[in-house]
Amino acid sequence: MSPALPIRLDGLGYRAGGRIILDRLDATIAAPGITALIGPNGAGKSVTLRLIDGLLAPSEGAVRIGADGSARRAFVFQRPALVRASVARNLGLALEPLRLGRAERNARVAAALDRVGLGARAGDPATKLSGGEQQRLALARAWATEPQLLLLDEPTASLDPAATETIEALVAEMARAGTKVLIVSHNLGQVARLADDVIVMSGGRAVEHGPTRQVLFSPRTADARAYIKGELPWTSFAAAS
Image 1 (cartoon, rainbow, N blue to C red):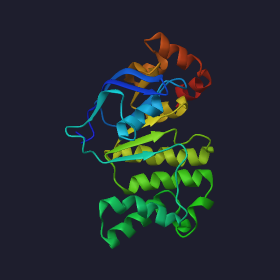
Image 2: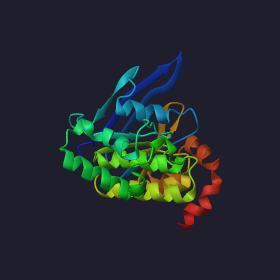
Image 3: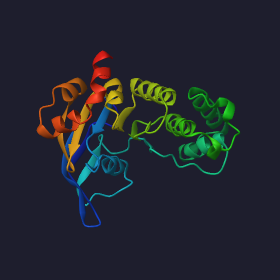
Image 4: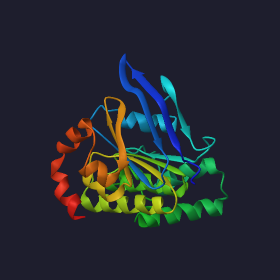
């Protein structure tokens, strides 16, 4: 089993500005592969990812990752944060905590950039990349660190179909190689293509959790049905996939 599993969210609560964002969220993610978090805006999906990664501290409850919490993690945000440096330097900075030798670090940088089709842009300013290229760079940074747990928050929002396809292919490849992936996405076609299981969130709680096809096509709860019904245009595509 992956060192990142199981992931247990036990009575997880989070408040900000007097508002309840998560309300005693309980969930156990034990299976490998890709787990999608879906639900309406304000359901607490992105906050859940940040709590799992340790970027935020819960107001109550606990996050437990694997046997001892030591799983190596990487987070890819919807809008990647880049420093004013070259593409290669931005990727190399992500590897510094791993204390690699120079040869291995350079090899990982080159391999990761080639994998996402940015090898020829290594010396270019990262901030001059297009939106899709910046997101590919963010995912390359994650891939190069060889994470055991990858957290993705709307990684293809506002990207064109070609960039989305590239990112989805790399995410699927990482999952097949043993990385546990948690992805927040409002694109239910993407969820149908990528996810092995789905957690539906509503009102700061997990209201349903099950295999992807069961949740998307035969949701058991009223909250899940209401959310998925509101996204009906995706269903004809997903059914044909």
